[in-house]
Length: 138
Image (spheres, one colour):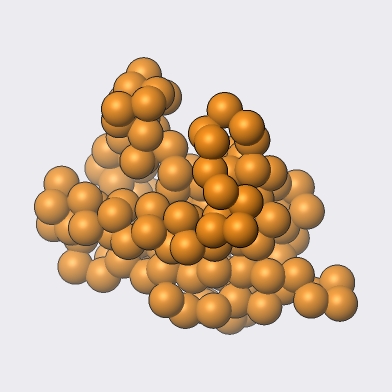
């Protein structure tokens, strides 16, 4: 069983992949981590009422990765202009997407601490500025 320093959950948007990888490696010193990357990132863990099978699968993957990687911490990252959150099926107010994403990250942090006794769950919000990503700790 390979141990890692962290389990990371983030969006699979290809515009952000190199930025996430650079931030995790250089900005957070995480060269080795378990990863769950899907459209919308941690949002999949909040959809228990609207998309219960989607959420169930997300929690199964997360449980598997927590057991496999035995991380010291969890890192959840959301990003600006997330196309998944902007999808009309969710009915989110486009002017409040960032607030919704942050609410979702905070909800997932609470649930991670309850389900897995995770002692440390770090939250970040990324924005692209002049071709580079800026990460804000939440």
